[in-house]
Image (cartoon, rainbow, N blue to C red; front, side):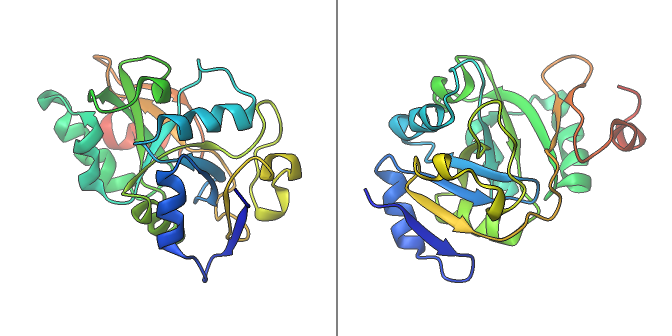
Length: 211
C-alpha cells in the first residue's frame, strides 16, 4: 500500500478509517508526542505497530480515546474506584494523564502484552481527538519511533525509516507539550505512579492525597 501523508487541515477521514480497518497503521500528533496507532479491531494492525517499532510484545500499548464515555467500552472501573477516576478525569482530561484500569475481554491480548490491565487517556489536542474519533473512538497507540530511539515531538523529528513502515502520516507540526504522559495505576489498593511525565506527582497528590 502506498503511504499517504495528510496535512492537519486536509484529512480524508473515510480513507483513514478504511485503511485502519484493513490492518494499516497511522502516525499522528497528540498533545504530548507523535504516536503510532492501529484499529483496536485489527490484530494484524496492532502487530504491525510492534514490527514497525522493532519492539518485543512485552511492552503494552495504551488506548487513546476521543471521548470519556468510551472508557466503559474497554475498561472495568471498580465501584470503589469510580469516584477517584471521575476526579482525575475531570481535572486532567483531556490531558497528559494515562490511567491504568482492569481491561474488558474485548481488548486484544497482543495490545496489553497478555496482561489484565489497559492504559487509557484522552489527549488535549483537537486534531488528535478528531483522528481517534474518525478511527472509531479508541486508538491503540505508542510513541512513533523505533524502540530505543528519540521520541518525536514534531513532524520534522519523525525518523524517515520509521515513516516508510506506516500507511498514513498526519502532519500536525509540533506537539504542544513534547513530554510523555504521566501514568497512574489505579488497579492496586493504593494508586501508584508508574511514570512521571507532563503532570507531576505532587500535582496529583494535591487532588487525591498522598500516593
